[in-house]
Amino acid sequence: MRAGSGSSRAVGVVRSSAGILTLFALGYAYVAGGAADGFNPFDYFGYFTNLTSLCTALILIATGLLRLRDRTVPPWLATARAASVTCMLIVALVYKVLVPGTGSAPPWVSFFLHELLPAALALDWLCIGDPPRLPWRTLWLVLPYPALWVAVVLVRGATDGWVPYGFLLPSHGAGSIALHLVALFGALILAGSLVWLASRFAGFASRGDRPSRGIRTA
Image 1 (cartoon, helix red, strand yellow):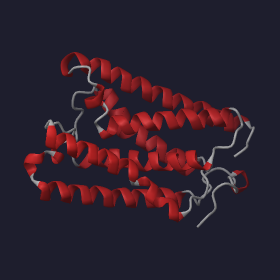
Image 2 (image 1 turned 135 degrees about the vertical axis):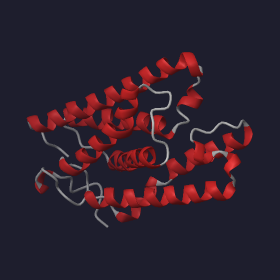
Image 3 (image 1 turned 60 degrees about the vertical axis):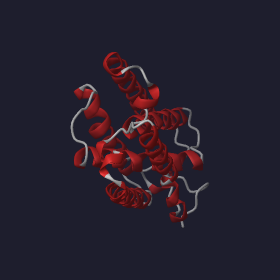
């Protein structure tokens, strides 16, 4: 998308700033909790919330800088942004349904990462109107990252006994874990379908400003 207007640059500033604020929140929580829990980045970013927020922050900064420079967002980055929005919706859902509470994170960090950031990402995706119309055949791309995360967590749970969330504890049994994972991946596909569907609407931007090349509608 090429839109050299002030509004386009404002979107770039807001997205980049949101990404930087997310990095600050993650860094603050890491340092604040390090004294009590130990400064172990493998444990800290073993939490789906933290790792997904980190990836989302980098995507926000990248897309924001492209908007500021009046550059076209490449198709792979647009798809990565869609997947990150999908995963952050799952972060909010899991927080509300399965693991409410702040845990060891400061309350404001927990609120920001679990509630404010997912809501802001959803509103950005719906209202700004600049995502390309994503082909349905690419919907499966929401799966590899969460599937890899689950695989690593299950291996860690079976070896060193560490899991980020109680519902993944090996002591609950394979059946319980499998049911939770089936439900979560079902919710992931549903959330991804909504994100892909929303890419077909212009939001507050005119359709003439939306990307028409690079990704074709399926």
